[in-house]
Length: 220
Image (cartoon, rainbow, N blue to C red; front, side, top):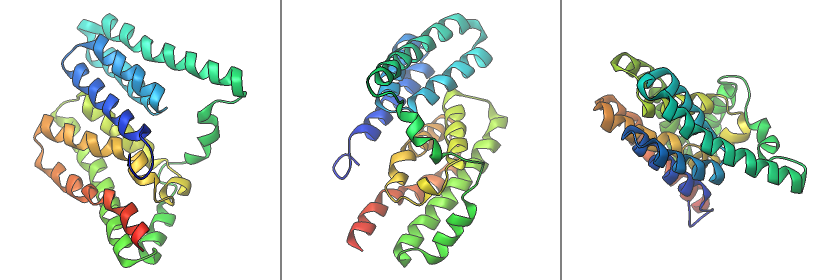
């Protein structure tokens, strides 16, 4: 991603993993720093901060005040940065990308058409592997709720839910896959090592083919 496109997504992923690690270690102030840097790197970092807020309020009652106070830092810095952009450009970045989201699973027809009539057989195989892994991740994630709720599992389900809202503008753009699904891919590993649920190895293996997709497109 860094060589062929840019550094923003890998860097945002690094901050996400740092926030998850320190949140699970209950070092909330350090986690808030990573959340702040992640939100300033990419807007999806705000989703992580909101998920952390919900997890703290609902699941960390004994440390609720400290959790919420840590949540305020990334939201304050993010609001400050957006206010600065608005003052200079008269528009906020997210408003330019609101067409990327729609109704849940609104792109099923487009996805099926791509699987049957995609650019090449190799591309269709990789895409089919990814879509199957995506659906399995949702099924296994919901199933895992009976074993208890954790911050990493909440994040995985949140990002899978957001992904289900993507319109063909995302599903139809080859470069969008490694950009927007890096979060899901990394969180699958985190959840697997936390819960030791072997079923998660299936979507992990399936999504491992995903980084090959841009190279296949460039070659073809």
